[in-house]
View 1 (cartoon, rainbow over the protein chains, first blue to last red):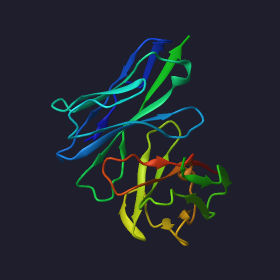
View 2: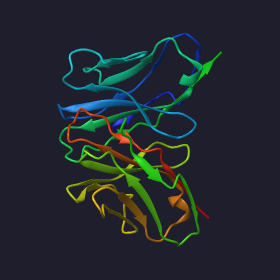
View 3: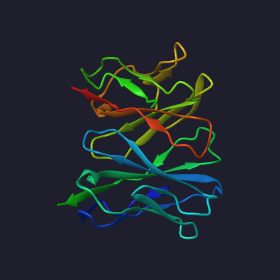
View 4: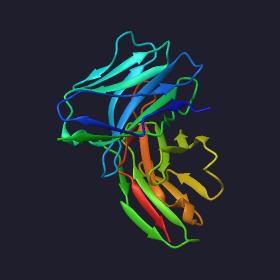
Length: 116
Length: 114
């Protein structure tokens, strides 16, 4: 079974509008962390935002916010006021607390294209 | 700002040759990782390294792969006899020993096996 599922292979959004990228996860571990990374066409992996399983509030980092719904096991990324530079692949990832190596498990990604 | 650096950025090698991918993790980090991303696919975990030994490896990380931290700063991934299917972007990452901190990724090494 997939631990991280991103159901949107591609998304379009108009510049200056908000967009939500979906992510659902599967774990039985009560302690885990959820991450979003951006991968532009140049290939590097850029950390965007983190949400811990015990965090009471949704994480926010500038224009990025994470809509964390624990009961539904979803951790959607919301990008507000989209910019052309937001066009990239976006990966959701999870780290489980029981995993002593702290490795990240990635979803298949969503390609976002921002239209001018 | 501290960063993870990888060399080379791109390597082309002939099938059957050995390659060594190099990484310098962030100096005060304790956990080191290699990930692989085949073109157009998701990022896959290969191996994690802690306290000078492998802490976990995936099914991909077979006997052809090895990792080493020879001098306390560099972290290398060796592929003994490359295959065409080893062509991918290889990312090195490091993190501290906290669950809730992000892994910092290097810019990647694109390996092309011909």
